[in-house]
Length: 111
Image (cartoon, rainbow, N blue to C red; front, side, top):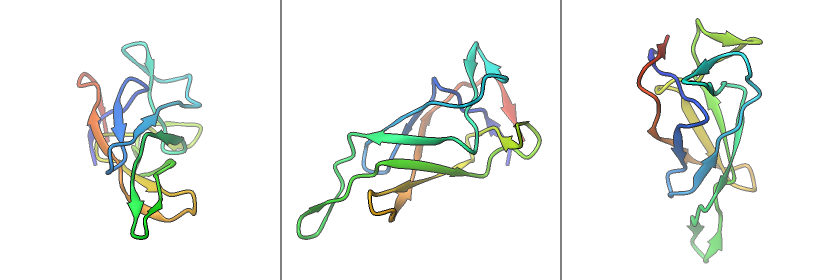
């Protein structure tokens, strides 16, 4: 699906309000002089307070991506776009929800 390209300046959160630390291996595609994020990037999450019954803390600690651009790639990995899906995982590798893309640049989009 088409959408605005996500960059290291975007804001991404887990569904419980934790903040993604956006880093990338990409040094080739820049948008407003900021590197675009790739489908192969994995992002750490800080500040998630999710707790299972018990209570047992189960914070989201990482986000892995699917659905990057099919046309714009870096070393075979699609550039992330607004419609990409970030899967949020606990320390036990349990899927805990889908990342929220709170903001991204609006000048450049990709399919």
